[in-house]
Image (cartoon, rainbow, N blue to C red; front, side):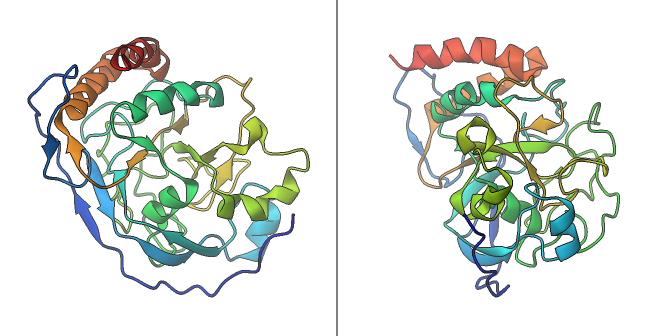
Length: 285
């Protein structure tokens, strides 16, 4: 499969954002709950739908990172909600002490779905990081300015680096990558580098770079990489999540607050999933 032609880098609408602060929601998770008058779940920012050119334009970089750099093309995104911070999701919270493997992601998807959330697509994460003007780094259009946490293994609390904010108002990109769903538009130009198919059947990709600059994938907002499902988790493969805008259910939000408390107590995704997987099963029936 050959890459499609690059499209004109024209942003057709300006970035519009609206943040939803965390708040306490009454009601228990075992009831039907009520619909809350907000479009995004707690801790998320709403980004307006946009048609915008995103991705790497420098041919030397594209040639240097075959199969691990997102080539510029035009993304057509609907309105969506995206976490203002990576999980656990709020300023002042600690990053997890581990990352996620491809093999853990189906369980993650099940937990998210039970609480009105989902994995982002690569395109959604990319726009959240690069914005309307296709910034190569979260803190500068072209060059990294060292505004973000330099230690992806033992980073400071979320939000500790106040200038590590993307053009769309999202915090703490370029510290750890985030798992995402590999959308067709991103995948097509990469496919020639994977003649036997993407690892893990191409459902998941780890989007974005981290605080290191010597990675095997492009060290910018345009980086993407893959892991085999048999590989263990890497600590620098974390998670920033999304949701579809609409009615927010109070019971789901109450349960989600409990899930985040469990994640903070466990300190690891692995420990959280061991408990959350049981809880997700309980909510099903």
